[in-house]
Length: 449
Ligand code: ADP
Ligand code: MG
Image (cartoon, rainbow, N blue to C red; front, side, top):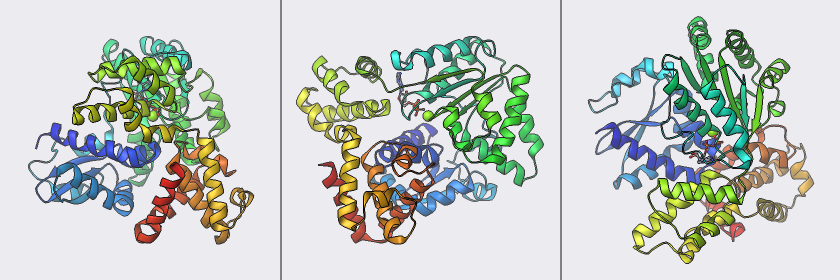
């Protein structure tokens, strides 16, 4: 089967999954997942690293199997392999597989770029103007103006879009430039891998001979002092050679946990630009632009209704439009206000004032488990408190679009570790205990209503 068809399938899968999981979960575990081969019996999925393969197998294999079966229209088995283990690549190699995905491609992170993210299709408003303007300036004049450029803001507001727009723009005008886009997580994994294989020199050569380095989600380096040490030297080497560095993060450099002071000060040395949630005017403009890109039109009253109600992030804007378009195609009806109301009720609920939902969760958990709100927010780790805390965290994650970091703040935790643990514990319990799963799902529905 052609790669193109694989792409369609994997994109549908990611779309479905993105309705179930947070954007952090999506980018951690699913973003780089691809289809290696597919036949009437099984889909072989390719994960970039052994670690991810392991996590996917352990925590997500049943949902992957279920959703892929739905998409393909028949019951399929799944198998997950890792690009790191060459052997498994060879063993499963099948003529229809992605042959070109050689070891070199995978481990070298050749320039990844996303041609769909450009400056041209980035809609500008007050809340993202500075980030957009400085990104464009840097793309037109690399290493001449703002170095480093540091973009920060909550998830789903266009940071990654801008990074790829920079990549695309530089590729046009500086054809021989060595450009590398990585996420903080990839940098980390690659470094660990290079050290394990005793090949730090190759790693350094690769990172220190670039003209432009873009690191997305640099907050991943929080608390990882060893990795920060290496990144510091990468940064310094490039900077001293007057090479452009661009970083994106979900928070200001000063707010990244346990980030070495010398890195903090370097991150702030150039220009730090934030992106804020879009105001109504910008939301309307984005809705308009996205409908044009998606090739359909919606009446103005629907447009305004959507823009007034969908506020949190731009990924939701895209998601809601896809739903609306699909609904209109299937029903054959023209898009109108009533359709928008029905189809989008899910989205609107999730966009409902999250404070409200959070209060509801606390009320529910304190009553159901006989604990106080203060206890839930306290550092206490005894089971009688930790368990309801896991539940509360899980529910808030499911019912709001708060980042793990912001959920952590609600529980007076410095970083997202507690949140991550809670989600893992509850996910696991739900998998092993049908009764419990039902209760949680029912609670979620009730709290939504
Ligand atoms: P982040 O990296 O900040 O989490 P992304 O760059 O992934 O956010 O953006 C999420 C989605 O919203 C992407 O599909 C992106 O194209 C779209 N998007 C964000 N901001 C804009 C904008 N100003 N104009 C057009 N699309 C946008
Ligand atoms: Mg991003």
